[in-house]
Image 1: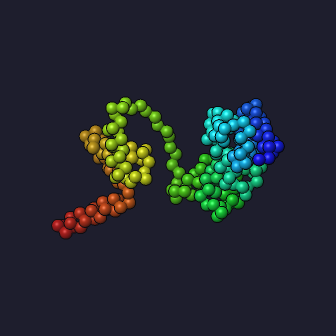
Image 2 (image 1 turned 30 degrees about the vertical axis):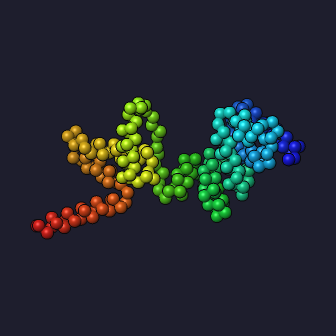
Image 3 (image 1 turned 180 degrees about the vertical axis):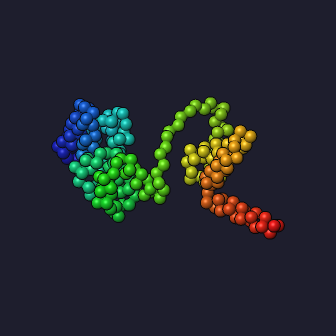
Length: 232
């Protein structure tokens, strides 16, 4: 290990972190340089100058969240073709979105096109574009919902989510499965709902089902229509 280089890099990381702490206005303005130096510390083992492991080094330098350090290293690892000043002009949240795409595409990553998209888009618009790239679907805003459950309630809730997951497909999120359970509950409360509301819930339930289930229901509906037409 080049101890002189190690000390130089470690000192530079400390200087950037101190500079960021001076004022929120400067926070994260040197994230790309910081990520580059952290990658070198990890690769060359500079953390050995005073720490038992790289994790221990990160814990000391990023006491609030080591995840941020890994985000910064991921940006450096996956966007080497984009100059550091251009990455830092984007901001680290936009750069992280580009890193996701670059990690997926590998050598086929079209850095020029995605960099242009990032520069001409808001952070939200870029997140939507990346979401559509991975899923093929338009981005839908979401909220995190928190509520308390007693231990005695958990088995019932988990069982309901498990059944919903088997119906909708195990790749579906738990939030998606909870929506399915709630829609099913509303569909069964006919005495408190108007026909229009019941029809809307049933339509939504069908939409939540996997495509093969939707097709089976459509075929059953067509069969009933033919039976009715034959009787007429």
